[in-house]
Image 1 (cartoon, one colour):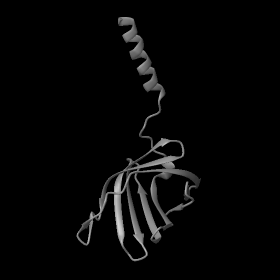
Image 2 (image 1 turned 45 degrees about the vertical axis):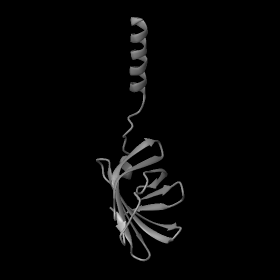
Image 3 (image 1 turned 120 degrees about the vertical axis):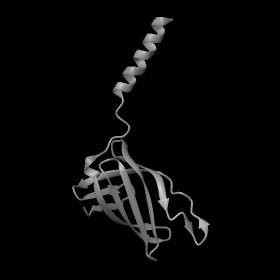
Image 4 (image 1 turned 120 degrees about the horizontal axis):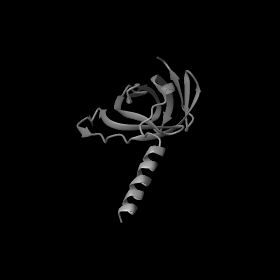
Length: 129
């Protein structure tokens, strides 16, 4: 019984050591990015700020001037995948009605060059800082 337990712990330890760290950052993505995209309600402009400490903020503005903001943590769970875990957002109400929290996102991406990143949906973000 004792050998089985030791073997099980050894297997768990080897698995953990072989697995990549979950909260990896792709340093090429750190910075301030801007994009224009089409939404069901019309065109939107987005600014995505990815900090080197793993925090992010995204500001989105539609053509009528309505702005929303969400923030949280970002990391790379797998090569070419960006995870945005939303921890907060604003506004939380519009004209007295509560606004649902935006969902966290898993975004496929491809670095085109030092100043451009393309998402899996074809949106291109341009580095502004």
